[in-house]
Image (cartoon, protein in one colour):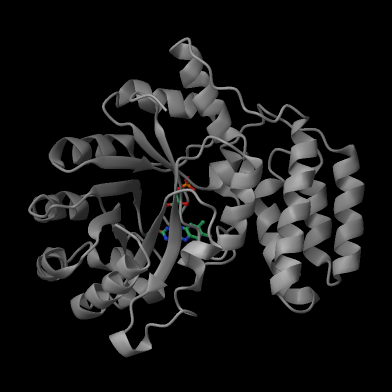
Length: 346
Ligand SMILES: Cc1cc2nc3c(=O)[nH]c(=O)nc-3n(C[C@H](O)[C@H](O)[C@H](O)COP(=O)(O)O)c2cc1C
């Protein structure tokens, strides 16, 4: 990878970008550089065990560099978990200050911390000093308005954070409405630590418009857009290689639908081998198709039918029938990814 290649990071998506998903994804698609794992809640030292850390145990993972993420507001617990992660070989841990869900917010965790600069200050003061891992943070603009992040920035600037991932929506927006690029720009200029952009990168043209507007940003995190179009990182890398007149050729040249079929088969069998009974497997696969049907010509119809299925055998028949006829709609307005229903967050 050249210095000017963008660094593309898989967004953490709890319940979806599991270790199984991440492992299978990188076997089938190229272009991703890094993954951030979905959050793990901090617990006290005596409760830290391999089951809690299962999703990020190195032997369960894809081989791409992985950044574990923690959510919590108790500095001691965070430090103890950071020690456990360091023992597993991790050099960096991300602190989730972005989760918008009300039950989490109410406990002053996730985005619920954004309106409380003093609490964040006291927390970072403790953990930056004592954590053996570098600390990065993932933030939103605020709970209800962007001023919350702006007021927090002088605090963030005090600490040697390795990165600030900014998703420019408020928590009250959840995942709806548009990202506020003006607010992102303002935050970017005020932040003194490295910044990564996250939000609504659903197609190459939006990616390019970000690169044009923010030429100094070279780290991008992709979530729903990449789940809907798993070729997106390959396309972005191929495009930036083309711009520099050098080579990035995705190694697999078979039809996109064929690649989706193989990806789906392997993911399904991964879940079948670890989950017991039809319902848990169906739950995971229905979530998968929430996003994965967006670019399929018959995806909407397929998803409607899949949602009602209660048996894995029927599920397999429906998927086989629809995929046999599906075509890939590359230019299908992938703003749709931002409208995909969200089913899993706690
Ligand atoms: C179902 C779901 C689960 C998510 N889980 C997490 C999580 O565990 N940690 C986190 O920081 N963000 C989480 N997010 C937020 C995403 O990482 C990302 O910030 C958000 O989807 C916006 O990026 P996108 O527009 O590229 O999807 C989640 C989002 C969704 C939709």
